[in-house]
Image (cartoon, helix red, strand yellow):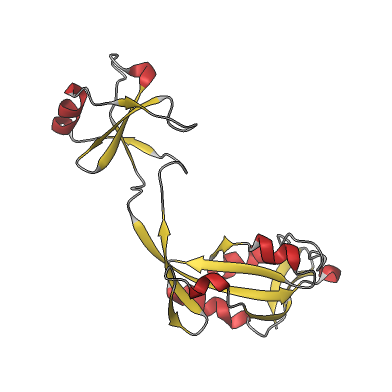
Length: 196
């Protein structure tokens, strides 16, 4: 990765993003039903007894939910496996990840020139090489939020990526790669991330 610089993504001009510092934006990471289920048994026995008595349970729809009866009660969703209804295994579940929960994340984006001679993708390829990107994620405790498919497909000379973290300090540290040369180098038996 060379000629690394900040990429001012068009989406940063929307109401979904708030600029908090130079090159750093704050946004909401919204979780929603339909992405995943992570269920645990409801531990409130009085509530479970009440929920099991109601006839307002409905069969879920979509790939994740067809095997469940679903009930929304007091603003929260509860689940029961259809095959277990009426048996000793009839358990009322809650989703560990509350989909109404909104986490603030901090994001920044970069644009850079890939270096195929260092086993990175060819500039004309729309995908981004696993390395050194994966080592950058590990080094700075960030993750990829957007791989900018449209930009990477249309720009044959550069690669684009957005990084995110729940901690602004991680993003600040990541920005230390701006203007640097970042690559992996084999030294003996090990490959090291180099930032020069």
